[in-house]
Image (tube, rainbow, N blue to C red; front, side, top):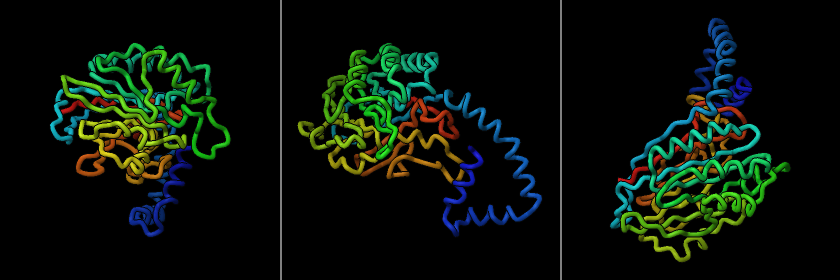
Amino acid sequence: MISASLCYTFNQMPKHSKTKEYFRTLHHKKPVRALTAATLMLALPFVGAYSYFIGVKRFKIDHIKLEINSPHSQLGGMKIVQISDLHYGPTNKDKRYFNRIVDIINLHQPDLIVLTGDYYQWDPKYLYDLPKMLTRLRAPLGLFGCLGNHDYGSCYPGHTQNDPFEEDITKDALERQGIRILTNEAQLLEYKKQKFNLIGLHDLWSNQCDPNLAFKKVNSKLPTFVLSHNPDSVHIVKHDYDLMLSGHSHGGQVTWPIVGSLAIPQRSKKYSRGLHQINHRKRIYINRGLGHTFRLRINSQPEITLFEII
């Protein structure tokens, strides 16, 4: 699979790419061909085994210090934890893994915890196990989330074999355990007498995503955070906000040095991971997720994001 992916990646590079020409020149040298073949044959089994058994569970905490550009913001010191794309199901059902995630998050004592969708995958019998584990999460301002495409039963637009989940069932299972799911809704919260907005959108692929409805009664002069699973939402949200929190891409999940990810399921390929500035105020952060759609992660480590407002 990995060697096929490498070939695909090479063929997808521009015809006159300097990188492509460099590797083509090297490839014509017999010693280089022999060394490359031998290296691949020796390395690929180890890379594959590591990615399959260890890479999918070796999560890290990315600590982001963030200044809010809203006028008169007094949120300094607030800590927000974001997790995303848990994909709890047949290929990702290790309860020890998820309980360890909960324990690590609680150790950091966040003020607010947000979850940005794709909680489940493939089999509805896992519907109630995950929320029971997540209910141990602790944050004074609460737990809030939005839904992802898999939570509506959509693998991707036009896919003939979708997930056996529905929006209402997924939302109910999570809210029963104290996780408030925002769907085109806004919640006014307060940290040390500073009010701020938390907005959650329907997933972009659900055809229900309506930023105008979500922002209808929002005072955007207040610090404003938006939860939207798909980073492509950044193109349709014209309202003012400080930070959009997304997931969906898994950071590429399989990402090669130099050439990048083989497949990112969204229009804006540059919004596959990390923090990006949209304009003088607006930013987006894309979390790499903690789960997977297929059991493999290369150069895209599972992530818990800890934001510290300064």
